[in-house]
Image (cartoon, rainbow, N blue to C red; front, side, top):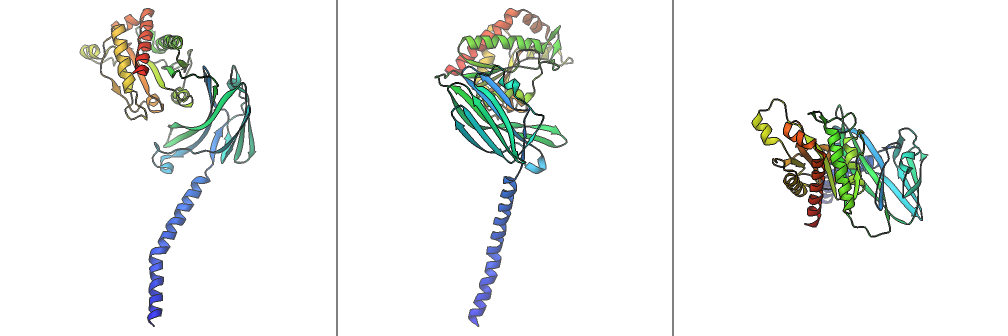
Amino acid sequence: MKKFIYMIFGMLLACIFILPVSYCNAENTATSEDSNSKVYDLQQNAFKYYQINHKGALGIPISCLCSESEVGDIRKYTVEPKYSESINGNRIEITISQVNVTGSTDNFSSILKDNKYIKDIKLDKLDNNTAKVDIETSGKIDIKVNLVKRRYSSLGDNKYEFTTFIDVTFEEKVKDNSKIIIIDPGHGGSELGTTANFTYEKQLNLDISKRIKENLIKSGYRIYITRDDDSNVGLLNRTDPANLLNADLFFSVHNNSLPLDVNMQCVYMFRGTTVLYNSTAPKPGREFASILMREVSSIVKTNTYPLQDRQSLAVLSSAWCPAVLMETIALTDDGDAKMMMHRINSQKVADASLRAVNKYFNT
């Protein structure tokens, strides 16, 4: 009788302790399987390619559209592509599973134009959820394949786009340790920026940026500029080259505006130069921001006001390298605008920027 009671007691203990654990494990397995079976999108006309001296980077975008309720913390959610790579001589084969190929057919002509490292790209659907990217390269180059997360973007109605690039980089077999810097002329195209004192901000941003680019190239830096004409550039498209090329610095050039209804004391205080950075970024750009503001104001003789910690700005929160945004002058201030109408001052800003970059990397 005692044995029978012990057996019943043991079975009850098993039901109390073992079954719930088994249930939890089953639930976790189901959740894991659900995550592992998710099908992402591969948009064939959204490939990215950027090229600088001795290096190129091809970004293969794997993305999904989700609501916040589906992913939880949108800042932490990451698309995790499942792929395998095969590199054989001058051919690279990347097989991507659990993807749905979307978008219009693209023959990659824009990527292949003037491309030093890629001779041809082909994208094939092997079955409903598997795709293969074939890349033919030219020359003797080192090839690496990594994943690069892109910042989420809001589509409205509580919908977000999440993207991770399969980043294929091509580097010449030469020793080049020169720093990679992305120069970003703010606005462009239909995005005019500040319009005041007979000046469009987008035009002034481009003029200063081109001068900075020329100075930096002459000094041995490797430079990519996000636009070199009057064209529209999306916010995340501005930081994609920084992330895919694994840049050392992202430098956005703007000119400020002040509200029309502020009093003259405020105008006097906030005209001139300031630099914005993001203290919560993986690699905050405050150090370079401080050097840059000091150099520009001392050479161009502009007024300065404190550095701005702007965590919500897209270009400062989506670059994985140190990133800054320079407000060169206040275009709505008559004195500032008149000064920058003389192109010699744009060149002074470029010269001051070069000094700031040199000091930053040599510190």
